[in-house]
Length: 186
Image 1: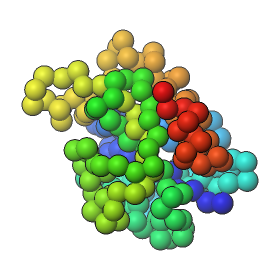
Image 2: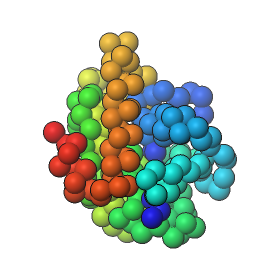
Image 3: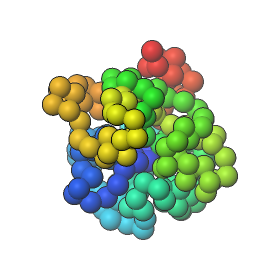
């Protein structure tokens, strides 16, 4: 059983540790815990880890957020992974920090990375793990907010949230979307 786990983010040091890069941060921690390292491959940083007889192919697209669909489509085809075995890790303004939601499908909700994946795949029926980053920004300052780092009072919460995200990824790969949603979505 093969799974494609896609952490959304932007490459470059100026984007490291920003809210928009939480997908990269989750995969970096998962790879670290499993002793794996990423390699710069076609359209993405790539590595793989094994969990309970499943191979998790981890990618961090190098296409920048707005063209994430290009990397997702390429790696799905390259590895012959069906859409139900793809999981997109994405930041979500509509959820407060600390909220994690697994969904089997859904709208892009204004997220450029998801919008591009939807355009390239020509549907929105792919699982996604939405990581709440909150919406504590003045009107019209959304871009500045998602491209900023987490606040000092939020940083202590991140390690536990990232670990919980990793648990959800492993659960998704072993017991599937529905049971993982029942167990983790609160």
